[in-house]
Length: 181
Image (cartoon, rainbow, N blue to C red):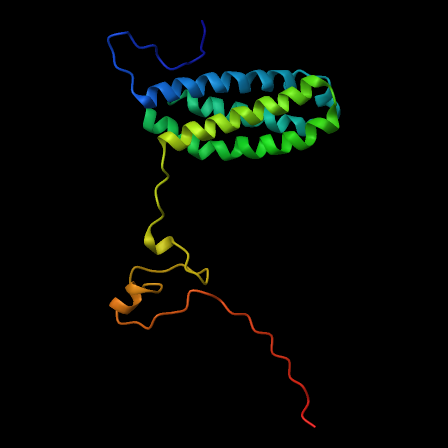
């Protein structure tokens, strides 16, 4: 029995939404990433350079997380948003480590391939998901502290609440005292 999950095929009479089309595209991109994973996982160089396993784990983690959401476009792109940074970080590290492991064309192409996969997934995500804004009370102010719902940070909100407007910049002054003669 094949447990590989893909976006369910649609009949010609069904209208496919852009989200479903993009989910199918993500699954194809992940198939390419999976082949890079397989190449690295089974390469002899991984014995001397275990750092290469980072990309193996990154692809595996993202692929397995997404396969549980192929029937739910909103959930799929939410999970992609949560997990894509892990693959991006693994890809950057892989680009650093792969040339140290081998200068062979296979490794060079694997770096290019995984970077292209990350770029494509990022572009698809940008079309389909807008992360929610943090609640106002959790947003940092210019000084870096969190504001609360009862304390507007600055600007028109502060003036409207009857509070003096705080500057939206930080000044660091180094005062050196010199002896008076």
